[in-house]
Length: 486
Image (cartoon, rainbow, N blue to C red; front, side, top):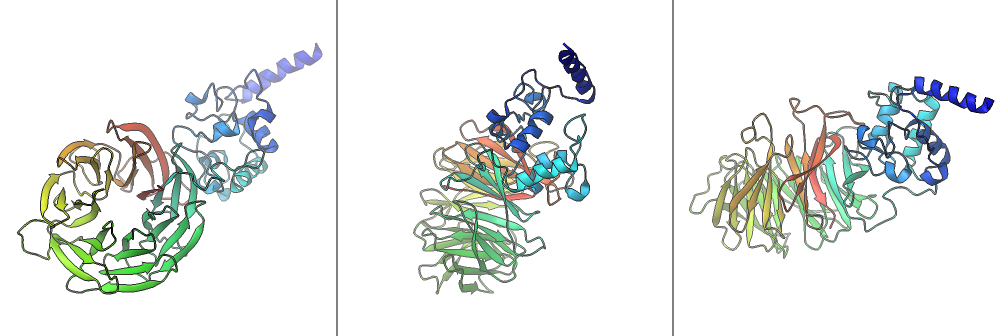
C-alpha cells in the first residue's frame, strides 16, 4: 500500500513539471528498436502522451518517436534526423540549448519540461553522427545499392540533399566542393547508366563525381576557374560537355579518367552559352545563347573537331546577336523529333523541329522561364518560372504545364516561392519541384539549417491530376537543381 501511494504522489509531481504526460502503458524498450541508452531517453522524454507518440503525433508536427522505425517515417516537414548529419537534423536543433554546440531553436524540447542535460544532448548528437543506427547497428536507408533516389543541389550550403524515392524523405546530406568558400553546386545530373551522379560547382573549379550506390565521392574533373552553369553527359556515360557561361567556352571531358580533353572557344560563334542537350546518338550538341535569339547546334561526331552552326529560334529571321529571346534552357523530346527552349526575356517556350530547326510553336508562360522537364507517359512539358509575379497575386513563381503534342498550355500551377529545378518521376507519377525561396521578401522558413541562409523546400506535383500533393519538405539554403536516379 505504501508503494502504491508513493507511485501516485510521484505521478502528480511528474505531471507538474511535464507539458506531456506519460502513456498509461510504457513502450517496451526491447520492442522500440532503439539502442538501449538512446531508447531510454527518447521513450521517457519524447515519445510520451501528448507529444511524439502514435496517439498524439498529429498535434506534434506529425512525428512519432514511439519506435526507431516510426522516427524515420518523419513528420509533416519531412525527416527530423539525417543519418551522419546532426548539423542538418532538426532533432538536434530543438533539443540543444547551448549555441556553442550547434543551432538552438524554440520551442525547446522536451516541450515545457526540463531541457536535456548537456551529457544527454551530446549522447544523442553523437548517435546521429554515427548514423543513428537501431539496436542492431542498422543505419536507415543504408545497404541497398539499387535504391531509387533523387538529388537536389543546395547552392547556399555546398551540399546535395539526397531523397529516398519510396518515402519522399531526405535521407542524406552530401558535402561537395573543395574548400571552405561557397562554391555553389549549380547543376546536377545522373549519368544515363545510373552508376554516378555529378555536381557542377558554379563558383568552383570542378565537376565532381559520386557513386549512386552509396553516394560516396568518386573523383572530379578539374576545370579551372569559370562561371560553370550546365553540363550534358554523352549517352554512353563516358564523357561530358561542361558550359562556362560568362567565359564563353565549352570543355569536353573524360568522366572515366577525369581529364579535360579539349576546350571549345570561338569568339565569333560562341557567346554566353548556357543550357545544353545532346542527341540520342551523341553526335549533336545543342547549347543555348543566353543573350540572343539563337542556339548553337554543334556537330560533335568528332568531338576534337566540332562544327559550330548558329540557328535562330524563328523561321526566316536573320541572326541578330543582341538580346531578344535570351534562351535559357534546352531539352529534347523523348523521341528526339523536337526540342524545347525556355526564353527568359520574352516569357515563352519555343518548340522547334529537330530535322530542320524550324519553329513549330510559341507558348507564352509566366515570367522568366528557366528549367524544363518532360513526361513521356503523359506528353507533358513542365517549365519553372521563378520570377512570375503576375499569374498569382502576391506570389513569386509558377510552373507552366504544356502538352508538347498539341502545343497547348494546359495549366499554370502555384508551386511555391521561386521554383527552379525540377525532375519527372514516371514510376511514382510525380514531379519534384525545388523552391529556392532565395529572395528575402519570401515566406520565412520553418527553421534554420547547419549552414545558415534561407532554407528552401521541395514540393510534389501529381503527374496525373497536375495538382500539388500537399507534401512540402524543407531543405537547406537555395535548392537549385534536381536530378533523378533511374
